[in-house]
Length: 304
Image 1 (tube, rainbow, N blue to C red):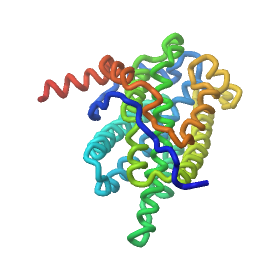
Image 2: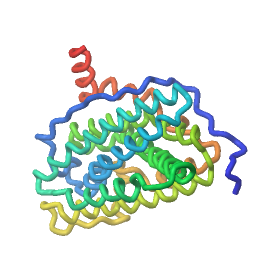
Image 3: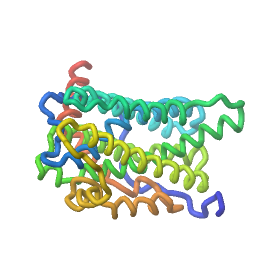
Image 4: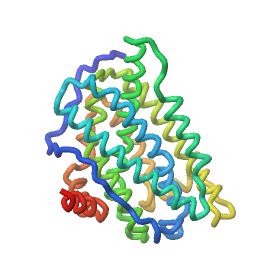
């Protein structure tokens, strides 16, 4: 397998809005534990985001701050700075859900401690000699982030279009959190991949880090869902199963297994570029209507 692709990824012709962090706030007072009524499995499958994202996105920010001095393209540098601001806000917003879960009898601390170890220790900084070893580890993490961002954009696009959640009476505050976050993931979906291509772009590294990221996400997600269901104080026999995941996908309250399978060859295509998947126009339209995002804009304008 050649490490140099004969075809280079090309972005789709589209708008390129400047990325900005929106200082959102959410009130969880009236959000029930099972915010998708009568569906604890789907609720907790999505709740895993609150376990993974605070530590994961803090890690994104930490790595990208190390990368900034290596970026030679001014436009990409501006995008990365905007990306850092948005990811820091995502981490904070999901982190603020955890005390609400704990108050409802579901303490996430045992699981989040494991996630923190993964990002801070296993994927954290290493004492390496300067030069090629140190650069190799930095590029590996940049490539891992690009692979993970493929799936955050996939989930962002899914939740923006998941009308079954509305039809089933999902809590509007939680939906706004998920769709605000999802819209920003779609908005900045090309940044991580463009940065990877700018610094390296090797196809073997892309495949290798995709395999690592995909396996880790599947493992952590199923483990997190099992943790939530096992510790949910309202359930006497909470269990997770692949069959239930497939059923939830068919109901439209989780992504379908077919859509997830199709996302694999997309990323592994030599001509893949994130801009070909998802709609910037749709993302910006949601951000213009989101209760949390519009309130954040009003606070910013009012304080200007």
